[in-house]
Amino acid sequence: MFLSNFVRLVTDIPASTGVTFGNEVVSYECPRPTMGIHRLVLVLFRQLRREIVHAPENRQNFDTRDFAKVYNFGLPVAAVYFNCQRENGTGGRRI
Image (cartoon, rainbow, N blue to C red; front, side, top):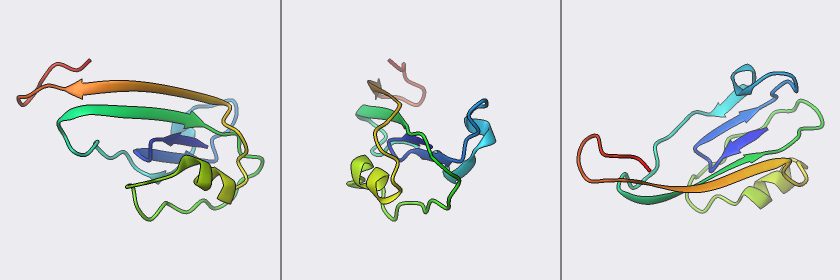
């Protein structure tokens, strides 16, 4: 299962493939608010079996640890964290 700061949620990804072969439970959502610094966390869990994973009700105050406990995912097998900021203007430079 791939969890990206509740920006995108993909489950049932076959081990020898990529995210595009999984079941997208929550599609990509742009960060809110649209301006300022955003913290992005990408987390990868190993699913022991295929199962129905329900989309979280709310993006605000989402707790990855609690979500992982509900579905018995255990510890993440990979994670990455980074900050990005969109500058004022329509296009802006991304860092």
